[in-house]
Image (cartoon, rainbow, N blue to C red; front, top):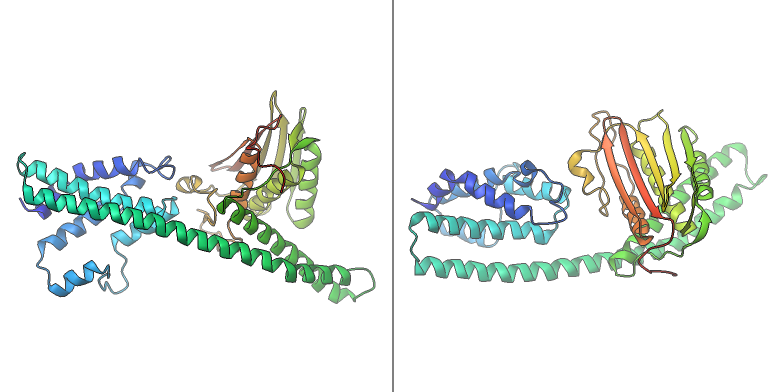
Length: 383
């Protein structure tokens, strides 16, 4: 039997091995379904079999060795679609490449077992050579990916730092002009818009700098002190209500809310969660901030009513630079935010020794934060 024929007749066995290997690529595959793990795999294998069934010119062979894709008149291949979906669910470049290396190895192994049970020296040498190439590719991709990430993160850190000075000048000028008597009523509306826009930009830059700190190995510092979390929740609630006067924010508190936390950092977390709820919650429906004191911890929940987050997106919602599109067909375009707010929020919570998780159903979405009453963080204290 030819290799193409073997692939077509043994798709289920090959796909089972594909799925089993993909399941080991954690944490991205942790919550993925079997269907998601196999996405486009069958079409990819069938395309490979069709290619093997047809004669190949020297030019086509050269193009493949250079990684040049065929001209499909704007149509996307199954392999290209697979790459896009793997990105959405959180696979990185190394894991994506590993899938194809494992696929090649498993197909050749299964084919040899099917042909005869005896050792074929030539096929063994080809397989060993492929394994050597795969190992070299894995090492190169890993180093290349690390260097690209380091360069990008350094650039973002410099950009965020350098943007702060001109933005500060804009904010201070707007604050000066907003004092009574400096400008007329019409001009004052424009000045207040400038102030609000400058505040939004400042929050984006803050998240960007926090992100680059974690990526460059410095982490987000936390300096916990004994305080009343109720006061932090009240301040975050009032700030959100002032920033979004057209939305309704409910505040519910129960039990002893004293704990060892970083006041500013916890306020930052609540600000990010409430802003996220505003962006993705249904307009006209209330957003609830609930804080409850437990025996050894404080639980805080932010709930918004609206379209649920797609199940496959929940596993990557805290990843940096990720934005999730709503399942609501009436939803507008993606937010213009950097997609860092939830990532930063989780880093701060984890820095306190706590947890932050998201749950989404038809009724809405709930972000639940659990903080230990006594600080049990990672020790990254101070600036």
